[in-house]
Length: 286
Ligand code: PRT
Ligand code: ZN
Image 1 (cartoon, rainbow, N blue to C red):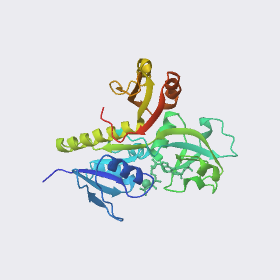
Image 2 (image 1 turned 90 degrees about the horizontal axis):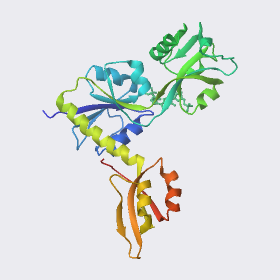
Image 3 (image 1 turned 180 degrees about the horizontal axis):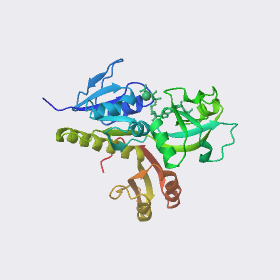
Image 4 (image 1 turned 45 degrees about the horizontal axis):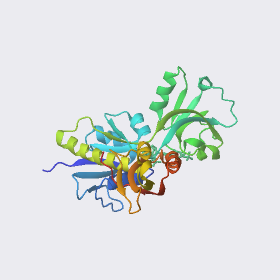
């Protein structure tokens, strides 16, 4: 029988869209009818399982799934036999401690002897231990933010993104325990066929990610500026330079990192670059 790599992604929720988009951008043709629990990718030896994110690490440990996409927070909290394969650069958030706005929080020792409500008991207890604090942990699975208001706990530990949920519930963020983003995890016991498929997938993910972080840049410049401009935007190997029909001018094509782009533009203009076009790249193989 043909080997399939079984990839578990969230069925619905904050990771669903990003996980699907990533796999689709990697060229996987996925039909996801509503309510489906699994689907065979048509053009790649991959089967997708749609699960609750919290269950994915256990499914991988049990080798029902081979690979999964979860929040790093879930990967660390569940602490199953899973290996972190790749950070995926979406669903960024942090796991933080928060207390009522009116508390006079003086530092981590404030927590001594207090009660903390959280859905992340493992991470919180490790954090308390590392800081030599003894506090009670009250595990609840949802609506953690209301715990201090109803007298269930003195503090909470929960995921924060914009901070508006804390604000609405009269809480303030006092410690960041963990920075998190979506990650790809895998079983450490994949056979060689499955590892080969995973490597192919990772290669494609890298191509997609590099493309996202880079732009194709075209500009016109006087020939004498080519050297200086090349030193600013060297591209993958070196820029492509083509003569324009106007004598003494060239068209220069290169690749520029998205983060450096605005810093470099002023420099390029000062060297005489004109007619600068910046175009998205779909895939980039280094
Ligand atoms: O049904 P299932 O169990 O699969 O999903 P879930 O409800 O457990 O998870 P889901 O979809 O809410 O989140 C999945 C993952 O997304 C989390 O494990 C995080 O890694 C990541 N993520 C990113 C977030 C957030 N941002 C986020 N803002 N997870 C949760 N939140 C919640 C948070 O719990 C709090 O209630 O949003 C609220 C805070 O948001 P702000 O913007 O008000 O600060
Ligand atoms: Zn969940």
